[in-house]
Amino acid sequence: MPPEILRITEKKHIIPYLEARQLMQQYEKVKAQLLSGDTFRTSFKELNPQNSGIWSFRINKQFRAHSIFNGNTLRVYKIDNHQ
Image 1 (cartoon, rainbow, N blue to C red):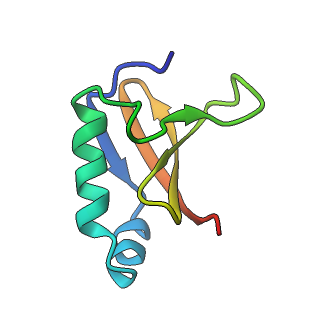
Image 2 (image 1 turned 30 degrees about the horizontal axis):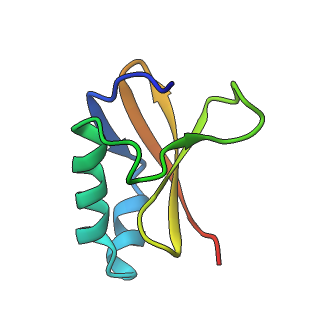
């Protein structure tokens, strides 16, 4: 079970990457879902191996965000085009 998410931050290169691919609206929607505690619809999960500390959530069918926890803050460090 993931820790409670109180805040989501991004590394500085994430926002330009999302804007260039017209993903900001979808990303903001997913952020709101995670902050409200809805981790099921976003496929929020810890990547293997378990206890790696790396978490992933779906932005849309094509893109996933990779992140780590710093206390109750989720820090997005990478967007992955998994297709």
